[in-house]
Image (cartoon, rainbow, N blue to C red):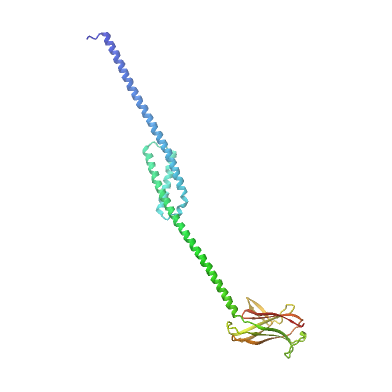
Length: 302
């Protein structure tokens, strides 16, 4: 078939149209691929930004947990663990600064940070386990100390009871050693030794008594101090003083005897009257071995 000039013209026009269409398709394809690459890149960057924000939140939480346990390092006796804790805490602070101040564009860096979080959480978990163990041990020690304190308190109370019982026993034993006095009397007498009813004419005052048998009283020489006070409350005489309950007491007269534990009857102590006596109540007190062994009031001259 013979191609005419007119047909050749149409062929050229058709070829040009096809070429234009192919070119348009190629351009569109290139543009579409570029757009898709840009969208993909944007999506990747958005995903990295979201992961960065998520990591920053996790690091914030981890930093707070480290701070919450900061004051409890005193419970740790493991120096190496304390060092690791300090290093981990510093790393958390640095990574947190990086996450909040720098834009991360590498998925590899995001993965590294995730691994860092896992490692730091393991360190913190081990650290917390150590603290919990020590807290339990300390709780056990506190309970043990409380039990020891309670035992000591009970023991102290028992010792106090025994001590008190011993003091009471000692006091009873001491009192048992005290000299007893019976038949105590006070009489005003003449120079002849006979009773003088008129007090103004009396020459002496006679105190007479008996020391009963007492096997608990230590035997030996005993000094008995006599005190006589007149109705006005003044001491008669004043030949000296003796020790009694940590102080010195003046006495009227004294007498020394040899005590063997057996009864001694009719012991007499005289006092020569050297002042004017008035009728009334006279008080007689006897002391020996740092005890007041007798005290009685007598009425004279009435």
